[in-house]
Length: 202
Image 1 (cartoon, rainbow, N blue to C red):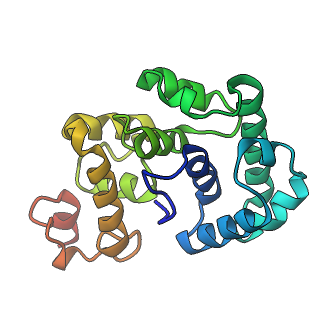
Image 2: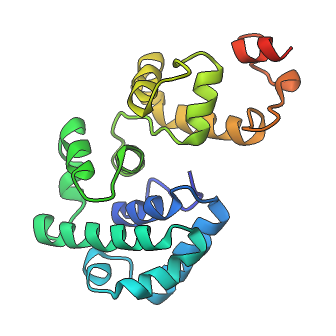
């Protein structure tokens, strides 16, 4: 997850950062969010009324900027129209209801919803990004051909809810530093004695 995402941040800001971060390196996510926050106040009201072309200009560095700008504006309008601009009114709902409500917004997928639920509301869910997906499958914690939901639910059965946030962050750190997409460092990996993928490589 981008370094910008912190549990103490406004949940709407976390939502916007997560939308920008899709298929984007952390450095470009941070640059895009910085550009956006220097141009606009990051609130549903302001971004709902912003020109979409101006949002696009701010977040262009993050890639897929046209789709992301449209999502940011649409989500902001939905929050204003249906929830009085208050994302917290969604986050106090039971986890599955809150998750469905977020995902009912155009452009908000399961990973974005799960990031907001975990980091902004402490809800028991594990977001599955590319690192979490790769590491969990290599470790045999999820079938190689499983989709997002199957990976997420497998991991949630494996860990205690109180450890979901830490597990998510550790999977990401391990994927970035050791269990890389290309040329994973299996010989020095502290988990290689447990990892079926490492045994195949060796």
